[in-house]
Length: 557
Image (cartoon, rainbow, N blue to C red):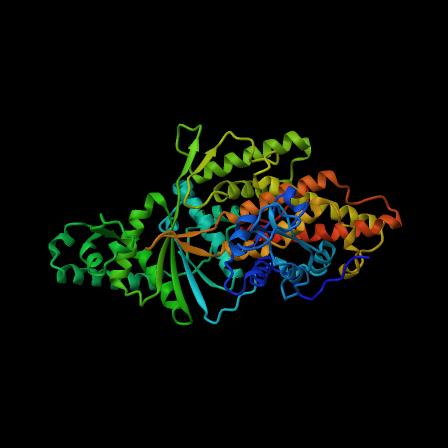
């Protein structure tokens, strides 16, 4: 019989590490005293570890332990017993705690953990619980989309910034933030192009309010140029623009010390610039009525200097009232093996033709019709998003347009992730068909399954590294940290893509090795149902992760 869970409720890896650290070293224990193992090799013998070096620092006067040849790293026996019997909310049940050459290790009661997680895996499809009293709005200003009038003028670096903004919006929303996307209106052609990639940008008809705000901004700037000693005639001599000196304002408010480029000085402000700031101001005014507000400019590195000008212009015309304004910079996108520039429309069509060609080579003349068109578009969207988003946003992306790894043959591509979604869907279709035919019985309640039959290394790997870690991934992906004092910020926008690729690779290895739908013999059903429940959880994690980057999973291929 399998072990019963020692206490109800979900188990959280981060909470387990905290509780174990407190039990070992007290409330002042550093957060990194325990480490979660993730490699298949190490998981054969342990799940959590305190390295031997850390033990020496914590227990310098310990005696030689039977299992530890190095003097000065022995944990008191009663403390080891305490760790073995430890029970707390959020902590997985512990099977063994002992010392080895590697350090102090813990192995969990795996059947009990399987039971506790798979009995109801719905809590693992959401971010970690977070208690936060204040309501916060995050304004995500995707700078490259302002004034963009055609997909032909949308550069690859612009598309990367738009994808990052869209992904961040989803992550922040499921983590309890209210998100406002700016600009709130795109031209029809750009909007349709982004919809091909699964991006549904908000639409608000703000023409009337924009005209009024832009007009008031112009009046303010004319008064400002006169008050600051600038030649008002200079304004008249630049049709369509107003020359504003930003240096005086930046020095007065010590903004150069906050990370603004010291070369910022004169700014020739045009109509597009004023509309950009007006849209920001409109969104800001709506947000601060009900909550605190953070403004995050998402901008390609080529246009960072101009965005800093716009930011200073907005600060000059409208006081920030203490609300945070920060910049998230997306690195360049470099196209390899191409002598001519390529725009976003050409990039999409090229990847789509490659995906179509690969599908025809694999499935022949069957690749035709509306369902296949939708499938090819979905695969293309996934391939593009993973290409542009699986790299940390501040780093350069190198695109090899001739590379075949964007198809399902490449294990690090979005198409490979989609292929494994289709494999799971096909497997469950086969099971349901067999149930209708009377080959297999109906699926029993998840709480009644015998999870002690899950003994394959790959099964624990999928549960411990992916299902149990998914809430941590969702929470960490929405966290942003300052790279240095100032206006620039870093986000973990690549984490979900990397998580999906890694999960797909480990699932594929397991699926290729283990026959999940076994022979229809009653004595084999117990293991088959436990495995199917594990696969249900894997499938839901895949779908939930893909949802954060607005990709619909394939159901067949």
